[in-house]
Length: 473
Image (cartoon, rainbow, N blue to C red; front, side, top):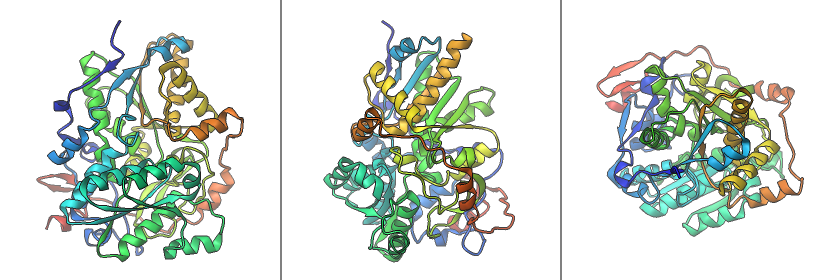
């Protein structure tokens, strides 16, 4: 029987991350401060170490992965690429379906791909303590794991609704030595403000980010670590797509379409960005970001400058946003409950280099159950979004007779999300298509920003932001 899993050996773990900025048609726009001017590195250094900012601001195409990080990656990387033959048979489709399985990591998701290098780079910078936020808990557990690996203390503000829905991810974080608190808390000025407005607040990623950033900015011994959205996070995740390209090449395959869940952008960017360069070189692969209808940043949001958090502690970024004070419903795909989208993903979508679709909650669980019964792996609720979109395309192939090659990112397993599956089987989950009127009300509160341009800065290390110079000096 033909192989259903394509493996690489440890020597084939990527030696470099791929930086999509080098191949974008237009340079990214800079983040802005409250005065509307570009935020310089000196301001960003309040919450990030220089080792991280070097990557965040780089325009270099290939950035070397430190050997210590590659050694840590070897605990679970390279991850397998699998052919979903039984799912193909169940659907009766002529399409070939492949998935990259990131659930083999210690935390069961793709998030350690960035948590490990972030912890390492903070250690190199002499940082002893990190704060962060987490939604569904994949990022929080991953940073707790990475902090333990490199001897860094970690404090996590976990969105309250997820804190209550996903107790075992809390246990994972504590097992790896992290402190975990349900956000909003009474421990920060931002948290106290949120609770004053709504004592029963379910929380949001934007709120939790506010708390984590506030604490990091107020303590000299602490920096902030982010699990998605920013350039350096998306950069780290490209090990997924780089490995997938190599695995597909081993069997002479190349995808026609790639699907990945999209909340802040790291999941999608991880598998899609390495293929984007191929499009520039003449190949044509459709890259599809899949988001929930209840939090439709790309498909219903506005492309504008907005804060990454609710309180406005973060710089303003040009992104597709539903408004920084948007309060998403308590869907079980907690990792996708974010009001905005990565600036890089947003710009690529705005320039029509990638696509986006939104899918409803019930359909995603239907797809996840179908996949589990065919392939044996129970997916995380976030991953179910990519599975749904991939199945829909496979069924279109069935109707048309077209034999496409489809690839999706199975970004994590759902072993700690079984309460969500229980609710699905009990008929207790519901779809939520966020009302246009509610989105428009939230968008009224976008910050007012004048026109902003970014002039490429040509330096020996690549073409980056126009505001890159200070950190080089």
